[in-house]
Image 1 (cartoon, rainbow, N blue to C red):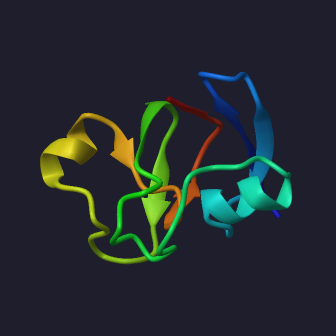
Image 2: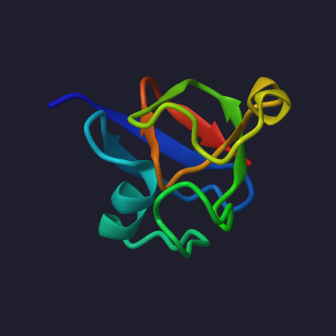
Length: 88
């Protein structure tokens, strides 16, 4: 299985995330706490900004506007890594 390194800019904490696992689940498995609530891309509690790297979504359009996506905002509860990531 392919996995990627995810680093949190604010704390410097990092964890491994498999390409087949949402970022939130990977963080929890590694003992890294991220804000969350619904876990399905609608509440936006986990909204954070992607400073480097790329993600994909298994659902067509999670709760992030086109403009937010262009500015790098993602929802870790439904985002899957496609590369190493830096999250703000």
